[in-house]
Length: 195
Image 1 (cartoon, rainbow, N blue to C red):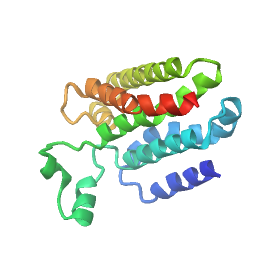
Image 2: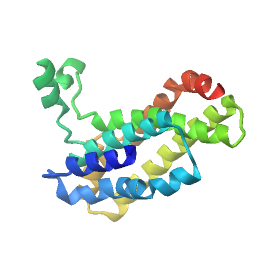
Image 3: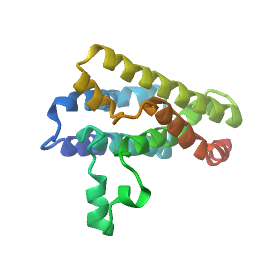
Image 4: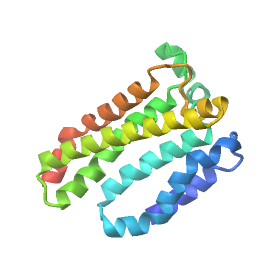
């Protein structure tokens, strides 16, 4: 049920895609994950809370993918809702939506992977630490993937996909935010899966 809802949301979000040349790169992995999720969930079952975290991340990623991350209009949204531009209040000069999603990757991945480790017979403490290690490894692999894209793709296309926006430390900041996101939930997840 939740997976079908997620698929519907992702398809609706893609109507009138503002960056159609980037859409397939952003959404193909998400769509494959959704298509194969019944098989994956049968093989590695997780509870509804863990699934909800995965769905939250995929929704945030789908919004980012719709706007090629660097162009998510959160300033316009905050102006419409709250009457101010978030970048002005925070003193930011770049679009930080990609950083938000990297943080939420760590935040949302911790419970599902800790739960899988715990169900394999590991202690709660080990399971959460292993899940943090997974977040760090997955973030590193993703940043290497982005780097390889810059080698094999045209410069402008790679820059738009990567969303670095001129920040030479973008990869390191993205990985750090994923780690912080995971560590934010260390104690609550440890307590949750321990009971």
